Image (cartoon, rainbow, N blue to C red; front, top):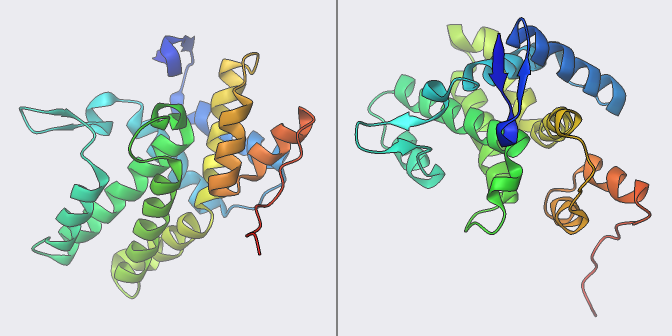
Length: 207
């Protein structure tokens, strides 16, 4: 089974879900971060699902692509039922996690950047956790959504590493890595900068 990776590279794998699980578990161990295994399983399922373009992109018959996050949020606010609102919140969280994790470079020079996606993803999963808590669905997923909200930046770091392990790092854009660290506080970005002899300093207001 061949699956197309970022930038058009194709890597044959027998089972895409197993590939994502092994890769994510390995990076989590290497980075020494703590993520609830149920949340990790959720992320693996999202990555596997979104590897199929028909599940990742919106298709209304006229436009094929990712619906702007602001419009998704408006759809959630205007939803006729709690179930429809929760589905849209979950969609926002899943899309932002996937984009910020695997396609962060596509946000360069766009009107919205990775910090916007991170903020939207954290809020979507956090709101979803609150919405479903106390329901039948919430008994299984409320804590998972909360973990996704609180560990969103950690998880995007993990997915960035999974992506880079496949692409290699021979042509790093250190300026972009610094920008990523400055905007999100990414521990992974800070580590890579230090490996290149660059020590990121916290900006302090001038007095």
